[in-house]
Image 1 (cartoon, rainbow, N blue to C red):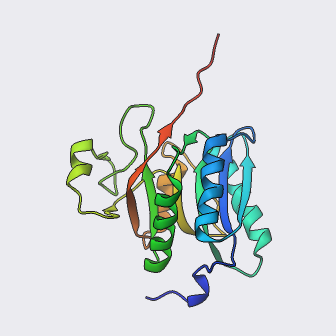
Image 2: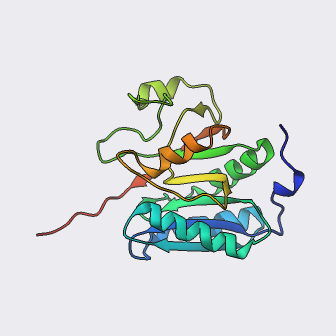
Length: 203
């Protein structure tokens, strides 16, 4: 079913970026790249930063802030960015192009990055046991913007339902989100390569 035209962003509408953090911090280089994305799209960038004891809490605070900014909207286009995701230099054009494509097609676009296990975050199956794509398998997918079954929300542009509340159990909040919204079509930005920087505790 076709979505209302009012859901499509125009140049005058800010690019909403939601950053889920533990401590209000994020990668400076990533922020700079996203500001450049806004310039390329000719749209101001507004950042919504959420912190909390858990990632679901952080995401919920971001969604609540966006809902407060747009009280008449049921959903809003937004870019999720995790605070430990480093966007390399010269990535702004790739992200801007993907955002425009996602809005024109009314789909979600996501980026790939390595998890702490070393596996790709992109998943080829909707249900457990999950199969994470290997590099070789990703290389065989039809491009551009191949569809994938599941993905992380480390960097994802989507039409976020503003009444939704993230939660997790033995499964992360990102997979629960996709399961709760099976109508959302997920597509990989195959030309974007991210760095996932995890903190190391020093004893």
